[in-house]
Length: 275
Image (cartoon, rainbow, N blue to C red; front, side, top):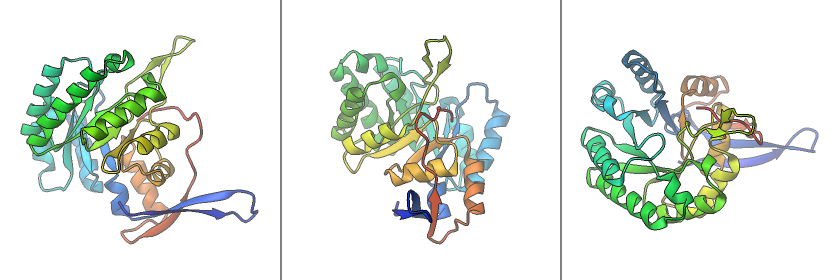
């Protein structure tokens, strides 16, 4: 996705303004419109698909049982179907994940988002993790789809993230992805929260993935400024429920179908997650 990034001095000369040159279409194709909340009814899904079609996003990200309905609703729209498998915790057996991936691609899924076995990664069983990703990637690619591998970074240390990027690069997967949006971590006060896609993790994933492997950020990217910032880091896709807000704000900021240079406010350190 062609874009340019620059830093320009402010009037006071003591700070800098981040800017990037983009088009409205580029922004739309950065977005996987997320329709994954467990309480969503078919009516909710249909409403979400209308949003996906209206703005011409990259994909609608959905639960596997919805694929036939979503394929029918999105036909001719240019919006692809993106089912999730092993979602959200990645705990199914490899055999079940492979079957799920095969069925998702055969039913019309063009981009498949899978969750790794997080416990195996934390335990250092990299042979298991690698073989699972390899088998699922092969199943997906053989059926004309591509694979995004979800790490769930909130549970991982940098060393795990780096190793996963290396594995995915060796296996030629299409995307590495930060989070499911549902990887809640218990805090000392007993509450559950998550960070999702953080700037340090996105930079780390871009650095340690080979150029052909794209990076998807999910969780915490909720505004146009957030999207522009992660684009400047080399991220080429995000998962979002805030599609309407992002795209309408883009129009209000003067972004058009012609290359438009726009400034953005960087994501604040410690910003909490949330689709």
